[in-house]
Length: 473
Ligand SMILES: *Cc1c(COP(=O)(O)O)cnc(C)c1O
Image (cartoon, rainbow, N blue to C red; front, side, top):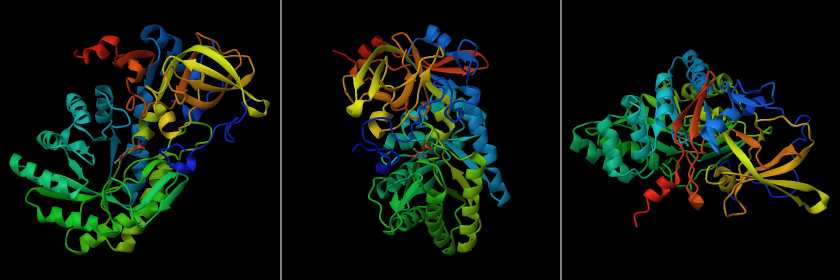
């Protein structure tokens, strides 16, 4: 069984259509939860996103291409900033939204995040460099990572980031040393592993934590990390505790357990005279990739988390600290789609008399690793024409030399899909360009931002020359 980022419970085998995939009544329909808010088909049956026709993207920028709807990205950022945050104001505290740059970051996106008043999480020197290039305000940056190099820590402190989330005792030492050398006091948060693994509609609560991130709560390591930081208060300014419990989470049950445990430690530290001003509940809010996913509205999610926070603080007898969250996928995921051109179509017999079409496109696991890596499900649709042909169970595969090179595991496409057709895969804004590779020396696709009927390149396509340029022999 392959791994799944949402947990092994989610993994599925191979066979006919999966249970969750309905036979479509209209193979050309766009499911609203998978697409940017303004996505539609025009009179010619063409997909239009951000006011730009898919065919025009292909003509100007080629395929494959990632397309990102700027207005939709901003709307989702605003929903966290305003609708998610409103219930926190009602319980008398503030909420800071850190966009998790690892989902997708480039200079343009860092600017959108900054302009919308959000904060930004980076987890490497490379992501920090993009933030700096975008002129992102340093005090609104959080720096993550379980093995930050001294150079990365130094770069973050020199830029003046608002927080470094420390992840090990070695790192506490390292940050303190570098801060002393630079003559600054480093703002830090402690990454706590709270023994909650949340994915989709299930979560597992354990007393132990067998993973690389953070300081475990149960073993007393998190409390010891707090001690170590307070003991180095000349160099380190402890801002609060942090936890991140998983990805593709659709309800608040896992957060309830996590917040309870995190605030337990927060209260213990407060009772010993150190009232920490902040608390971070992490990211992982789920999005729809297929018809089986139903994400919560930002306001409902915020109301749930605010109520959990209020209740837990009351039970612990502590004031509500300033809360932060770190959504990545929930801001950028559904704002993006990938446009491919079909190269070949093949039909195979399945056991039991069924048939499946294998539709090969001009990209694959190099531009979307999630299907191979996590058995992630996607959906897809014809991008430049609607079809009257009946639906057929299909699998969209890439051009790489691996049978696991699958983009969309199961989808109904019309039986007349043919070479030269364009296909659009929604929900690829997060963790696709970010996880892309040059596997088989296939150059990575560009990212095209669309807005108000205009398309603009924000990350250019890699060329064969780019690939050869690294090869110095
Ligand atoms: C990955 C990650 C996030 C963002 O996760 P999403 O599923 O994209 O919301 C937030 N915080 C931390 C610490 C992460 O590692």
